[in-house]
Length: 225
Ligand code: ADP
Image (cartoon, helix red, strand yellow):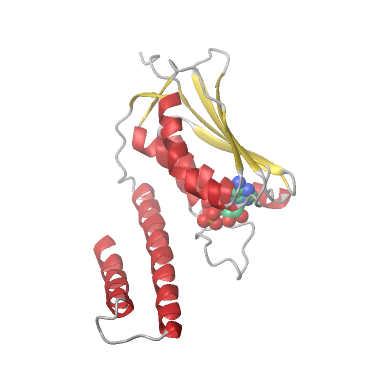
């Protein structure tokens, strides 16, 4: 399925790039502007298709997990480098409260990175310029065998009545036509499925106009029997 969906998109991107480069003849500034719009929309569509395919794989139980003990601090530091350009572009302040360097989680590393990245991407997307985002971690639970990774923002928040459904696939709390860069409402569904498939969970607390805090819990590493 992936190939069938991506192939026509690659053709659209490829041919419009040829035109943009002038290979098919001279192009006017107006045509260049239109070609840029085609490029931006194709890139966006590629991301959306990626999300839908990923979700379909999860739903079909076809996503494989290879859990190991993953060093938490180093991995979160790496995720931070992925999100840095978006933070900078929106002039958001970012506070990464480093965790104990010896702390590990028992998880599939790549899936964990994907879940945290989905949360951080949302935090940057739904926080106005000048706001702030905090990434932190803590040991929780009576036996201290669960790790909580928190992504908190001072963004637009989520209306109370939408909070219950925010993790359902294709649910968007702030849908509006003038937001061409929006996703399809799968980022949170994917992140929670990933967390649950690794023995953890994803929860949220939010207040409209104040901000949101997403908490991703996962089993602590090194405690497997
Ligand atoms: P998408 O961002 O692609 O719409 P998600 O599943 O990632 O889909 O999020 C679902 C909805 O939850 C978003 O459309 C948005 O309304 C809301 N949301 C997610 N994260 C945040 C956040 N940090 N602050 C405010 N609203 C959020």
